[in-house]
Image (cartoon, rainbow, N blue to C red; front, side):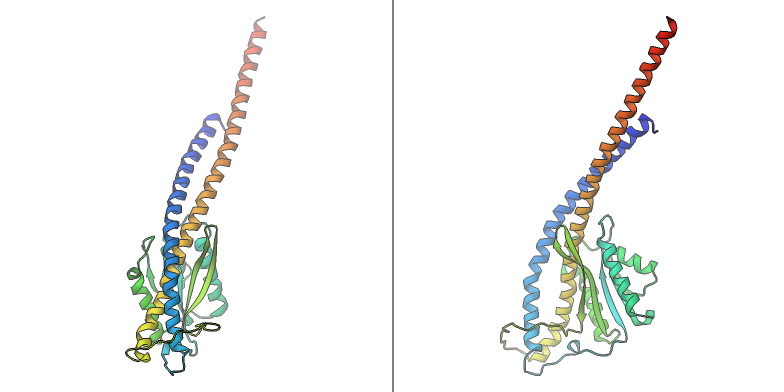
Length: 286
């Protein structure tokens, strides 16, 4: 049985850890509020730009663009969004598992795919498992601006435009609520899934012509999909970390209660032993 000193040290150590996890939970809750606002604020922009793109691509004008056309898939690009730090519950492991399973079930050679990793955890996972990395980005802030991911989003789009890859897929955690996030796979390019059914598309007049508008708008739209997923992923990261730290804090409470009970029992046993020795000694003197 552990000594009183050992149990007391474990109680103090657990209390110190609990203070840290509680503080991290509060920090993540604060960051989640801002991240959720950013993700929701970006939705109207995405809806409007998709409407404009769908209006041109789905119209009868004959406007066309390579990013709207499917071609035989010889090589696939994957963008995976993870965090730079751990202690976020299953946030990173779930999305990386989904990516790895997709690669294992779809490709037989590394020449058939490449990965663009956003986040240190995703980068390290790719290097550890020998997945080919086309580009990586780490150190993004908790509330990223579009300018901060413009380079990697443009890089991914340019890979498709230059026919270095024939399709581009995105893996990230979609934010549903503070306690629920869903691993999502989304096809970014080619843009063949513009859903216009049941929608009343607005008629626009374009200056210059629609071909020029598409040439400028489609890369921006594809980059915005990546940015929107990143905002979504950041909200999911903070929510997952907040939940994980809350769970750790609750577990620390239970552990402290168990250790306190063990401490009291050990202390009671020690006192009983001392009383027994005193009574035994007094009886021996009689």
